[in-house]
Length: 137
Image 1 (tube, rainbow, N blue to C red):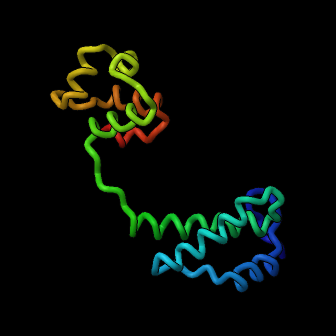
Image 2: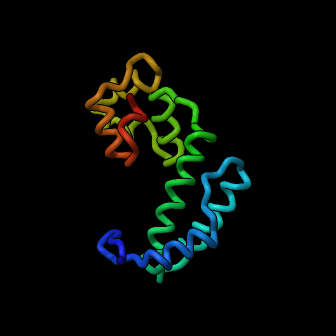
Image 3: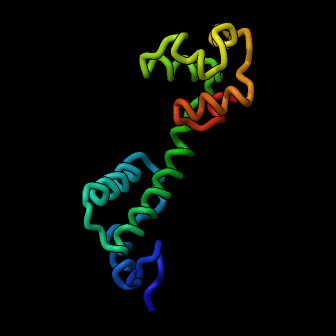
């Protein structure tokens, strides 16, 4: 009997064939992970995925993300440093983010490390930069 996934029916036999051919075991090495990334990339390049291939691509993404979170965790960055990096990356200056922060004085204090970024300001910055609010807390 077909299984529902995202409102499209999946043929269990076809899905099982995809699994059997690719053997997407959780990666233990960078080479294992690269193999899975190549499979996912090949699927991502196509626009005509079958429901089985779409479900399989989702499975690959979950397995790859799990491996990378465990092996390539980014070091924690101070909120002020995160703000500075985002500003630099986007070519923004103090005056460009002051309206988002609330005023020039508070922006100066945050960028100089004299004040922490409060929850309300963090929410506004996260919305402005389209990043998780936790980056600024």
